[in-house]
Length: 450
Image (cartoon, one colour):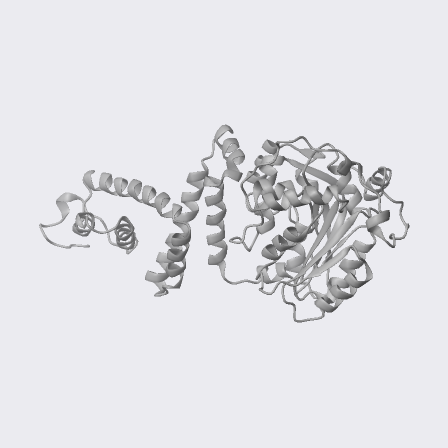
């Protein structure tokens, strides 16, 4: 373990990194030093082709030849004016200077745009963009930043977070051995309005420092840690990340279908393939306040949305090619895990919650959302059809074992109905409290429930 000062001193010893306190060059495109990693050519043929990011990568290689920056610092903004100035100041204070800043605003209504434009006017390494259409989420806006970035490396810093002066230098140092995905330790800064319960939530979360003891985590160890901490973001926020742009080519962008934990899902997607390099220093401060996106997520009462997002994650885990490495690890570990079974479990839960809301509370809204979700992801229908057939076989086996009831017989005889409708009726009946009778205790045609 090492402290931030030691990491920073080691990082500043890298050839081409200016010492602390050296002013930013007046014309950085001409005077800023190139990083040794940029000079070393990567082995040809390592890049997967055929995705939307292919063009972006080809452009980046061309840009590198033309002398574009090593790092693109990406700042997605939306109504963050109260804290944005300190974020931008932390970028300007970096000891490593071969970077550009890409600010993409998602139609802020506060002073964020004015602050960003003023910052861009003060430094020719900064470009400000505001697309005509809203992205609608921080993850989608982060993807827009990547599309406009020219650097070999992507460093996100969100509008309310702060980087230590050695952040870029230390993360570059962490990736020196060819690693393409890195995270740093992070700490928290709590604003005065944050209550004790919220503080306790963050302060008791597992972290990179408590879960991993090595500076590099192999893909199989990364997968095991994700399973152990399932759906808990022990890896850290987006602002603590540092990714080679080839990662976006190989593994895609942040998911637009997962709004509650897009960073965790992306870390899983990349880390299960690349492994993880760790910069063991507190290089990012995550500011916790009442107006943050994370606060809005914590206070969101729509728990069913998170249920559907869990299904979406398991769907990707079961079928997406980017998760092939994790599926292989699941099948090879002891005890083994089946990604399709994990998906089935989450999907059955989501469907049952929707059915229960309709029949118990006369609320059809969740069932409507579930059916819409199935239409968008038809693989779910096939997975649940298989699960329903298995359940029907168990019900029939139960029936033929000697425990009968006329209503169960009627349900099973209704063969022209869909499997889904049969399951709904069977579950509704079995959860109604009706007692099943042994064959000798009911008279023919009678519904004796005593």
